[in-house]
Length: 65
Image 1 (cartoon, rainbow, N blue to C red):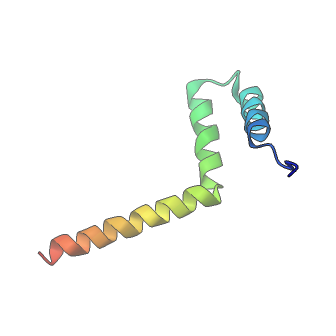
Image 2: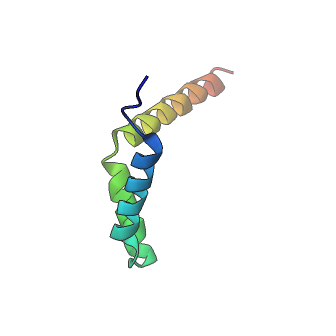
């Protein structure tokens, strides 16, 4: 079976791109860059929604105790 996708190569390319984009940034600039990327991340939005749902579920359980 021939491999058509190289996960490690993709990861290294993404890391290199991010490094080039951020290497000269100050900490506040880097923080803003990362915050913006997270805001636009579908995966991050799903994780936050799942976390909020779990917190709400836990709150309901505590209130009913």
